[in-house]
Image (cartoon, rainbow, N blue to C red; front, side, top):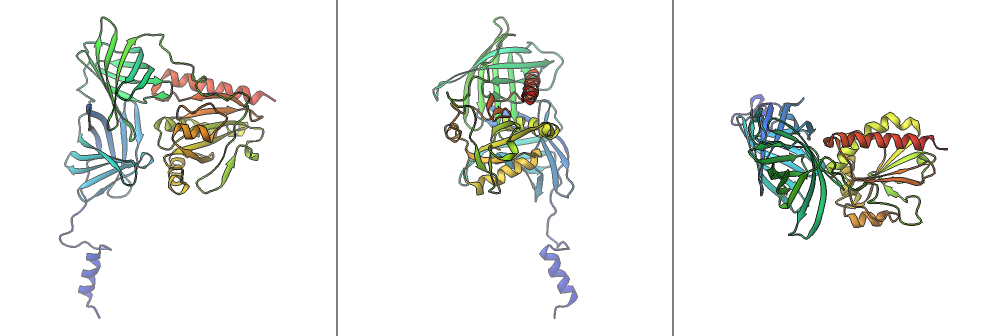
Length: 418
């Protein structure tokens, strides 16, 4: 029989109730907003990182800050002297050692079970500037609309036309680039001398833009670094009338096709089809997306609350998710996490892999799938009436507002049809 003192000692050392001599308490992270930097091939990529105490000891609510966006990440946890900030939707995380007001570690992106990509990460509590301290004055003005071309000659990628839209206050610049397949989300940065610096980190994207401004010629010329090793050069010219190709002209039904065939499983294995009674006689929005896709995340942030507000009018939504794996066991949990995060009430099914050619094969009535997201709107008879490639997210300002108006007007029109 164990004596009481010996039993108490064993319980304490097991970590069940009591603490033992020599056991260290978890480090306390100072809450607040940090100036964070990930070191990329293009140089330092800064962003804001806010940490707020969680409900449980050793946990923190984390946000990535880019311009006006505070993007919620998953719950951060402290173990020993380190903090881990996961972004499960994007298979990435920030892991850093805590030393007072400084965090030092790495950003990790898990490509496969065997491959993890990393970049150095550092954050300091207190500084609230992006690239350089904010100033009321700047030597040049970037505000406005820019006709832009991106080019990657190394990989022989065709030139991509884009539209840059920027606002400037003092030396602080915010905005984004719109492309035919989506936008670059929230960019934030500074004018330094005759140069422009912009960045974005959202857990999936690492975007770093640099350019020289020729004020006389009204042009910008520079480089764009993305992720671990992506690089493109870019040039832009100030043009208030710059615009993209019609987003309804890129993906369309093949000749003779009028509707869409879609029958795929939900994460629980239940097969959902557009021929189900749920969609009969309803105006139906078909969302082609992926849990890994930040632009899809922006569209889902719009569609999820929109559906809750409008479903009683006779509308439905079906999400066709194309993931990195077509294995339901592997991708099903990711779809479920996405549904929980965005409080999605409509079905999301696993339609295949996120290879665009494979996505097009899964939807044979379409000429191609050129972007995630792509949105189709079907009338009450199940006929496709509208296909929209890409999505102008809230970071695009008036372009987002225009999309929302056009979307609502089209739905209202289709609902009024017999």
